[in-house]
Image 1 (cartoon, rainbow, N blue to C red):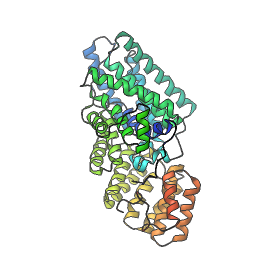
Image 2: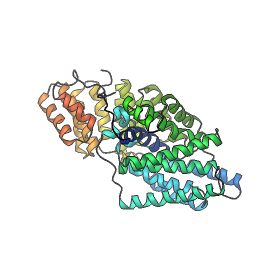
Image 3: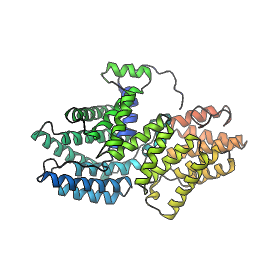
Image 4: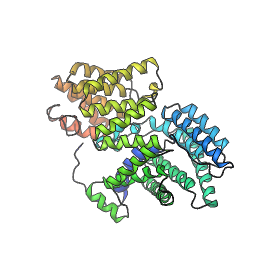
Length: 434
């Protein structure tokens, strides 16, 4: 993990919100907002509750398969039909908003666990650019989910399903506020409301296991603040619990109905941040088996193998990713340009296959990647050039990382390596076995 400088205590809660939400938004909100698993939700407000619940459960399961496999157009069509079939239930519009959000977030680095290593996601300067059409669709579906949930609560203030979906919708909106708008205080209000609703669900029905992950991720995020900010969070009434938070996420990942797969993804993300690589690998492999068309799960597995020091296994898997992408397999075309090359290049780099690694990073740069992926490729190509003894060209790459300023952590590492070469002077967190 990257080392952190001494943290100054700020005079407002904004840094607390920012640090805490880096995990809630980039990890839990992002993943848990991806609705659905092998669920069996009720059909609140619908006639024929038993039959409706069984049918709705099957429809949500089918929708989750489309969504996690990145079949976005098919998922939108599917959830639109669900919304029409169950016009009083929040699940249709909620999942429509989720699909819009997931498609947008997939274009950013927020869908990958490696972005949470060293708190990298929020050191990156870019953000997903929502088109006016995406923004309008997200807001339309979000408001309809709110309307339906509130209508159900007016009938019964203790309707656990309505409380659950309202809380999930607030968590989803907080994810948008953080990752798209970078509106920290707005996101803080939204996520705290969502957490409060899910805690109420736990009080009313402790067996409602989907309602544990969002509060769990929130508690974990607060608990892992730097100490001065954790104290400030306490002053502002924000409490954390690292172990309890992880336990909540694990409950949903193991026992959830609607949010099981999202909970499992969040568990994989947080295990990577915790450097509990064996548990992260087990979780991500379950996701890969269930959702084979999703390229991001496989790329996360490559990152985990690399972090474990299994460089040969990482190389072989990364090569399969490139082969599948070129063959048009699944939705591998949606992998960010240059990212698969970056992961394969890293596996080669850590095997000290300098020339092959440099060539792979250059190939990734030729794919016109986004600024964040470009920073990874430039930094790692500099590493490869340093390893091969080509100090001059390595310094050129490090200088470009610093000037582009697309990733703060990589920029700091590049500054260090301008003073001494990699790998002997590898900054903490930049090499898995040093």
